[in-house]
Length: 309
Image 1 (cartoon, helix red, strand yellow):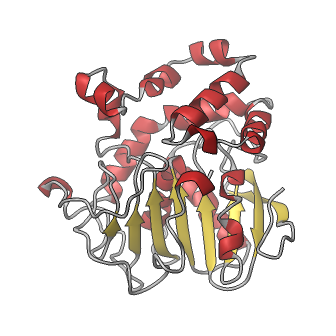
Image 2 (spheres, one colour):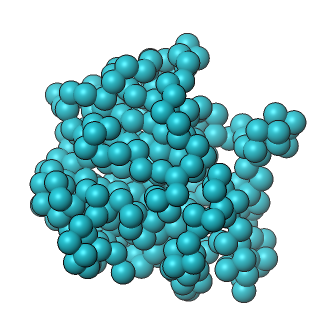
C-alpha cells in the first residue's frame, strides 16, 4: 500500500493505453508529476517520495508496461513505445502538461517521453541511470576500468541472451531480485523487506521475468532511438524543458557539479540550464541552474539514497 501526505491510500486504477493495460496509482492536487520506476522494481519504489509531493502536486505512479501489476504484452518494450504508453495514460487522466521523474530504466523512458512529447513534458528528472547510445553499452565489457569502478554491468549481456536467463532464473526470482536490489546501491540496508517482497511478488507472476528481460533486450533499439532523439534538444520548444540529472549509483548523490561533458555530447539531448550531479553517459549541457519553468530542485527533490527505495 502507498499513502499520500495525509496517510490516505493512493487511488488505483487500470487504463487501456497504446495496445496494453497499465496499472497506476494517483493522489494529490496541483501541477501533475509522473514518476517512472526502474528495473527490477515497480511503482512501489516511489512510496517515500509520494507523500512529499502530494501537498502541492498531482502525482501519477504507473507500473511500466509488463512490470508490476500492469499487463505483460508480447512486445513493445523499447523505451519509445513505453514512453508513448505514459503519454497516453497522462492524457487519459486529463493531464495536458506534466513533469517527468524517472530513475534507472524509468529515466531512459522519461528521456524519450520528454523528447517525443515536447508539448506536454515541462521538466525532466533523470536519476540513477546511464543512457543507451551514449556510453551505457561500454559498461558491459569486462575491463579493468569497469571492474575497478564497480560499473561492470555483467547482467546486461546475460539478460540479452535468448531463453537461457529464463531457464536459470525460474524458481530463483527472489534470489535474483534480492541480489540486484541490494548490490546496486551504496547502502544495501536501505533495501527494505516490504519493497523486496513487493518486487518478488510482481516479478514471480506469469510473464514477469519475460517482461523484465524484454526491457533489456530492447537496449540496442533504445540506443538508436536515443541517438535520433538527441539530434534535437529536449528543451527546444515553447516550454523549454529543464533537466536535473543525478548519480547513476543509488545513494551517491552529493550535490557536486560535474565537469563539462565531452564536446561530442555537449550540444545534444538536454537543454541549457541543467543542474547535474555525477552522471556519465547522458548527452547534456554545462551545469548552471534549474530555474525557469516546470519543477525545480526546490519543488521536487532529487530524492535518492536511503529514503527513495
